Image (cartoon, helix red, strand yellow):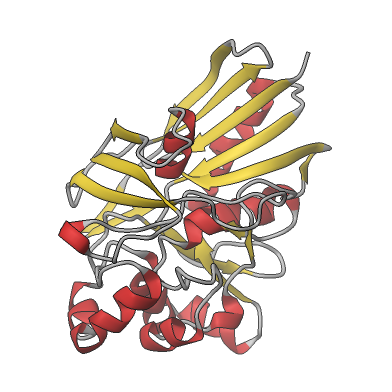
Amino acid sequence: MSIFLALDQGTTSTRALKVAADGTASIVFSAAHAQHFAGTDRVEHEPEELLANLRAALSAAGEVTAIGLSNQGESCLAWDAIDGRPLSPVIVWQDRRTAAQVAALSPVQAEIMALSGLPLSPYFSAAKLAWLLENNDDVKDARRAGRLMLGTTDAFFLQRLTGRAATDITTASRTSLMNIATGEWDSRLCQIFGVPIECLPPILPTVGEFGDIDGTPLTASVVDQQAALYGHGCRVAGDTKITFGTGAFALSLTGPNRRPAGQNGLLRPLPGRSVAKPVMRQTVASMPLARPSTGPRE
């Protein structure tokens, strides 16, 4: 019988769920990790601790048929593109150290919304990555040496676990650097935020070939809220889920016709795509119902 392993690397813990082909499931691993608060506006994680917990989850699961990975979303870091060594802490999605830099971009906020589908906010990854480039000497040195990789945590985990850095379209859609229409990194958005596009990992379909972990294929990588959308059985326009973790998030499939970005406060991330169906069949309207600036999030 095929057995699949779901790895969830979340804001407060890492968990592993084994699912059999008949739908039965069991949690085989759960471990919390440290939250580092370097200031009232800063929240960080230690990249190697998160990675160690993922490796422990894989070990606890034993032999499985295939693996899927969900990630925190906007949380991001810098690492060495050659050896995978982290060059910074993970700057967590809750971190607001870039509030002033983001406010300075207000003259182009309409352009950012039109291209990315996201409002201008320190919540998303773009300004955090730009902050690392401006304030971290190791990051500056790696860029000069042509060894810099910037991205969300999933890409870092994939490089260290499979040997290949990559992100998926759902996670990329939460950075403010991906063009919501093309599903690719956008040169104009990268220019606005000051993030070198050549330092970003490739964007892959959510379901596909992400490489192997000790011979077991990793066949899906997805951001946490879209993973929950799919996990709750949402498949057609109108299907909606609300999940309650650190924040409460409502996501609804809108169908192929995207709602205007920012309409009634709604955002429009993408639900995912697969190799077999490369055209996005649905878009998503989402709204954070409650999102504290600090504190845990599942």
